Amino acid sequence: MSFVPKAYRGKKAAVLGLGKSGLSAVRLLKAKGFQVFVSDKRPRREVKAALGRLAASVCWEGGGHSARLRRAGFAVKSPGLPSGAPVLAELRAAHVPVFSELETALAFCATSDIIAITGTNGKTTTTALTAEIFRAGLPRGRRALIAGNIGTPVSVAAPQAKVKDALVLEVSSYQLEDSRSFHPRAAALLNITADHVDHHGSMQAYIEAKAKVFAEQTGDDFCVFNAEDPLVLKLSRRCHCRRLYFGRKGAYSHAWVAAGRIRVKLPGEKEIAFTPPALPGTHNLENAMAAVLLGLGWGLKPQAIQKALKSFQGVPHRLEEAGSVRGIRCVNDSKATNVDSTMVALKTFTHKNVFLILGGLHKGSPYKPLQPLIESVVKGILTIGSAAAKVEDDLSGLAPIFPCGDLKTAFATALHIGEPGDVLLLSPACASFDQFRDFEDRGDQFKALVKSAR
Image (cartoon, rainbow, N blue to C red):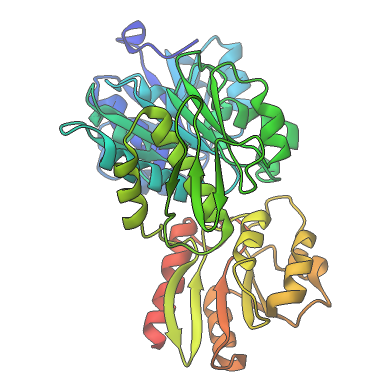
C-alpha cells in the first residue's frame, strides 16, 4: 500500500520521531494542509526545542507515545525508529496505516525521474558524483536535485522537484526497510557488509532492506550492481529490470578499470574510456564506475559525464584533508561510521605513521577485521566514546592504545605524542550519537580543533 494524499484529506497525520527527517515531514504535511500530531520518546523540553516555532501550531507530545496516536488517520515513521518498536505494532493493531518518510515525501513529488543509490559504504560520494553528472548532462531547463541520507531530507527536496527534473537520492537501509512501493527509475547497490545489525536485528534483515532499492523496478528501469561483492551479486539475480555491473577486474562487468582509466562497454555500444576523479583510494574508482553507469544507462552524453568527473572534488567528512598541525597531517573521515568504512580509509595509507581515532557509539560489529591494517599502518590508537572498551578488547596488542574519552583529548594526545610526518586520522568505525549530533557535527568539531591549533 502506497501513500496517496487525497485518500487521507481531512484526517490527522501522526509523525513518529522528530529527527531531521521527522521534522521535515511535519513541515511538509502541515504545508499541505494536514493536521499534524507529533509523538516522540524524548523529554518534552527537547521535543519543544526541536519543533521550534512549529510547537505553537501543531499538537505534540514528549516522553513517550500515548493512546492519542490511535486517533490518527495515518502515521509517518521516522527512519531511525526500529520497525519492531511496540508503538508500530499498536498502530497496526488499531488499523492506523504507517508510511515511511521517504514514500510520504515522494507522494508530493511531481517527477518520476528518481535515481536511488544505496550500499553500506560509498553512498554519499556516489550520490554527490551522480548528481554532478546529471547536472552536467541533463538538457537545459532540467535540474538534478539531491536529497536523502546525504543531508537534505527527501521531504524538503521532493516537493521542489518539477515534472522534468531528476531527483538523486541517497537511501539508507533505515529508509528502505519501511518501503512498500518505492520505485526509482535507476538505482545502484554498491556493496553490502555488516552494519546497522543493532537496528535491523540480523544481517539478513539488513540485506533484505537493501534489496528494496530495486524490488519495485520494472523492465523499463535499470539497476547498477557491484559484480565483485558476493552479497550484491547474489541479490542482483532477484532483480527484474535491466542490470548493469561494475568491477575493478572487468570480469562480467560493463564498467572496469584499466591503466588508471574507467572503461565502459554497454550492450550493443562501443567501448568508452573515462578519466576518474582525483580522489584517493580504489573505493573511489568503484564509486565513480557506479556513477558513470547511472549516467550512461540514463542516456547522458559521455562528454558531459567526463566534465563532471574532472571537476568533482569529493564530499566533506570522507577522507577530507583538514590541514596540518606541527607537521602532522590531519584527515577527517568522520563519515566512517562502520568498520568496513574505516578499513577502506586505512587502505589509502602505506606507511606505519597513522594515529587513528576510533570509537563512538557501538553498532554491533566486531573491530577485529581491522587487525591486519592496524598492524601495517597504525602507529597508535586513540579511543573515544562509549565503544572504547570494546575497541581496546578487539585490538589490544596491535598498536599502542591511548584511552582518551573524547575527541578534544584525543586530538591533544596526538599532538603530544606525534611527530612531523605522522597522520592523525579521524575514522571512528562507530556511530556518533553518544557524544555528537551526527557524523557531520563530529567532523566539524575535529576540523575546528585543527583550525584552532594551526
